Image (cartoon, rainbow, N blue to C red):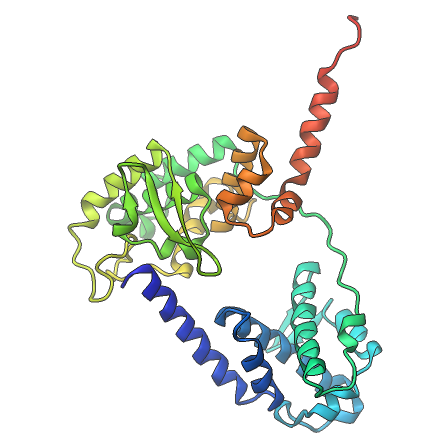
Amino acid sequence: MNEVEYRVQQDQKNTKALRDMLESMPPFCAEFFRGVQDETLPLTRLSYARDLNIFFDFLLEYKPSLRGKTRREIDLDDMAAITLDDLETYMDHLTFYEREDKQLMDREAAKERKLSALRTMFKYLFKKQRIPSNVAALVDMPKRHDKIITRLEVDEVARLLDLVEDGEKLTPGQQRFHEQTKDRDLALITLLLGTGIRVSECVGINISDLDFSVNGFRVVRKGGSAAILYFSDEVADALKNYLVKRKQIEAQPGHEDALFLSLQRRRMDVRSVQNLVKKYSSVVTPLKNISPHKLRSTFGTNLYKETGDIYLVADVLGHSDVNTTRRHYAAMSDESRRRAAHSIRLRDK
């Protein structure tokens, strides 16, 4: 299975999951998802469906006119009757709510995502003249507070890679499998730290995508566009060392070209890589919740420190909008400006 086939398989899986969800959603949702399918990925539509179901469940519980109805029975007249106050109450509701016996608290980013799903649906229904007004457009987006970027410091990166190599501080149970997986794990984590690729991009890489003559590899980025990324000699050494053992493994049918294999000899999935990173990072830095995305942030931080070029960082990380990159690394720019101000001495003391 090559990278394109892997992504097609994931799209098919997400499309099926959405169809299953639609069976319990209001009938007009099927029309909405057909209407936006040319502009959105299957995973995006599935995420919309999950967020919209939270909204529909809120309506059934809190709007008196809908008491006793099911999600499936919500109709376009009910949608037309939704007010700005209903939507603002919903946004407040997301601050703390219960779902499937779990207590949840949505922060600004989660609220923004849920409101985005609502805005997209209301905009579509209004455009198609299914409802008389687009009340969701009147709701202000939650104000985002800048988050501190969680990343590994230089010494933490070194300790992480040392741990992957020797496995000394792992539990006895983890050490039993360490000898079988350490070369793979070291190559994978070194690649994440050395290129900043997304975990979804990482698991899609094939052996045939690598070209050591230029120290580069082909990757399918978020959204489906292909790109060539480059890596250092240190990353190349880790990959070459792993490939010696990888080529001795007889992969399961359909996974022969996959670069990173699980112990079941199948292409690793995103969850497996997340668990792998957590296993090692929780030993090295237990106070930081390090995920593959935090390794991506570590790379982006290091690249920005080295170059000071926000456009280069955005290009390498695959951000479609440089403002996304600038927002993430704005605090570093402020830090650099403060250092620059203190470096200027007007007269000797």
